[in-house]
Image 1 (cartoon, rainbow, N blue to C red):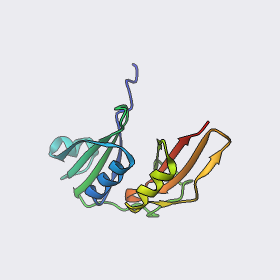
Image 2 (image 1 turned 45 degrees about the vertical axis):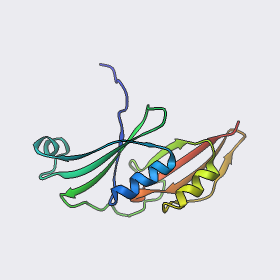
Image 3 (image 1 turned 90 degrees about the vertical axis):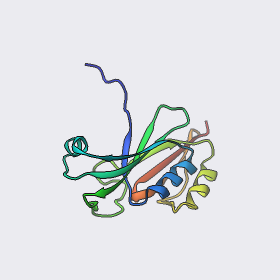
Image 4 (image 1 turned 135 degrees about the vertical axis):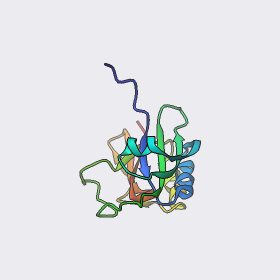
Length: 146
């Protein structure tokens, strides 16, 4: 058996429109929206009475997708702590390659993003940073300079 690809990463958000705006500002493109509910959804995720809206975002190269999910039912379960630090076990960061990290950070700040540290340089290869994005996830940015 061979793995074909990684299809997408999902992020549960409380404000779907704001999350779509954030990732659109980053440079992703809205691929489509859908309402998800029914027995197949319940069976797939292991919850009863699933009702959610999703927005599928894709990178400009078309190779990567991000699924933004807003649950209406059952009620969202809040993770603790709300904004976990970068060394917390589990999946909570997604990294994007950008062509201008300073411009990207400035544009995302207008959508509520906050730097966790600062923009730092790794040798003469990359400029990197972590920022807090929708639903408290960490969005990492990398600008290749070398």
